[in-house]
Length: 404
Image 1 (cartoon, rainbow, N blue to C red):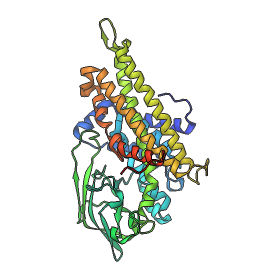
Image 2 (cartoon, rainbow, N blue to C red):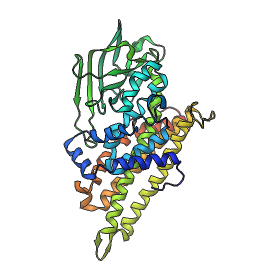
Image 3 (tube, helix red, strand yellow):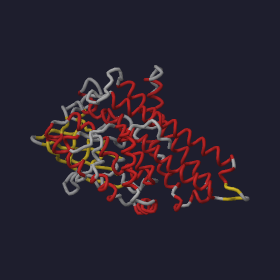
Image 4 (cartoon, rainbow, N blue to C red):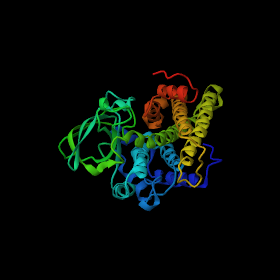
């Protein structure tokens, strides 16, 4: 990757995180993928050096940096060979905590975020439901107030790291859909304990194609009791609050996709230099060279879009040192969604061409690019599909009639 133009802070983050990740070999990640084993060591090392709290306030023990630096961190993790699995082991702890840092009370921030930053707790993000994947405003999980607690009933799906998480950022309905004026009303955000021994909570692991070192789950709530002070912000304002983390997540996932694409491209170009057929390196053939060159250019273009989006996200925050009041949330949303789309497509292109250029060896686990290819579907699908991003851009950027 071309590193010209990045800030000193971003390059410092990249170097430090790459150094930590160098302890974990390609074989480590291959085995953890095969055995479906969470990378506890990487999480502990990142927490020990303060990287889990990279974008959280300094007064709570965080680094006080922006999403631009957090995006670089997650790209570096993925690019190191850890892939999506390595990045996703800390992903939610970075973006899902952003709404808490902004909207929680001082007491809640102090009680909740310090233990995330130190690595004592881990967080997962509970929004998606089986029948309301992209229709967030129609989610059915309910939170019913009962004295000094709430009772949670419903189901969440595709919840990453629920097996190892201690806490969950949860979006649930506190007022029935038929009783609100707007669908965006009546949803509330909670930061809840995920006590696997408590009644009313069941977590079932989903077997999946890639990224198997981190778990994905169905989570079932049946009158699961949580403390009333788990509520973040006001009742009924959860959708507005949780939106604060969604654009950040698009930037972070774009960075992870870039890291995956660059990692695959390095494997395949190294192989193309070394593999000799008919008396010359296969990389000397344009049939190998041109697809890899094209993949590189697409990654570089997506890189520019990604860090542009992250910069807009950061500078739209009034507390940022370079706050720019002219940057609208409309512009941020368009940039972040565009970046996620472009980086996901560039990563898929790089991973697929890397496998194909390596032939049979690209299909072998020991060369690792097949693992990258299996993982690169995640940023194309989640947290919002390619098609929904194009719907969003068509409507919000181009002013076309809403198509769904």
